Length: 240
Picture 1: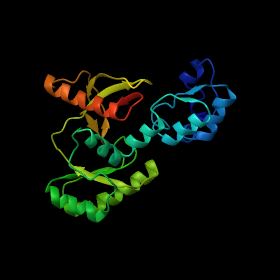
Picture 2: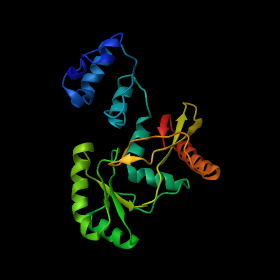
Picture 3: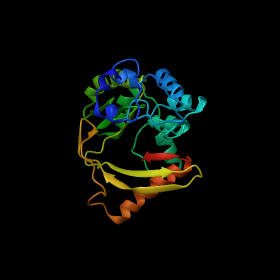
Picture 4: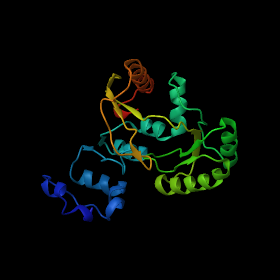
């Protein structure tokens, strides 16, 4: 974009193409990116990080234009981009999930879920990620406000206001498994990392390998990630 025209990465590149628009808008414009790729005879597009990297529609556009999308397949972006569907897929292959509801919920259902778990809950956006559209609720009296805020934030960030709920575990740790799948259906795990140090639901520090994780639990978590990836025929790099 014009904001990045004088940035080091643009200057050091062998070739760069100016996209119309400023800031994030330029990197979210599918039409101009596809047009630039075709005009410059590109046979592949790496969508960067954030922006269009998890947009199934963009992966589909690339496929239709005969351009390789460097990333997961469209169907996997759609599945794992929908947290309710992802939870359901995990449960179908015996991967444990938190107590929650695997579909878009209403305010009334969220309030009932709070009563049922008799504990704190998380209201979360079905779409997207990065901690946006997420609120911790520790009192039933706060469910209504948290629900409205999550809807508004999710609508702006992801273009989808659907929410789901799950039980909150106050002492949980955030452990990720990096996997990679090839075009022949092989899945390999590349180890785990600890991402529990967060601010506003955003990871601040990542440590690999994860400290203080027993070998038995490490094997269990890794096997779950590989099992889910294999069940879906996952392709490319992915974090589970």
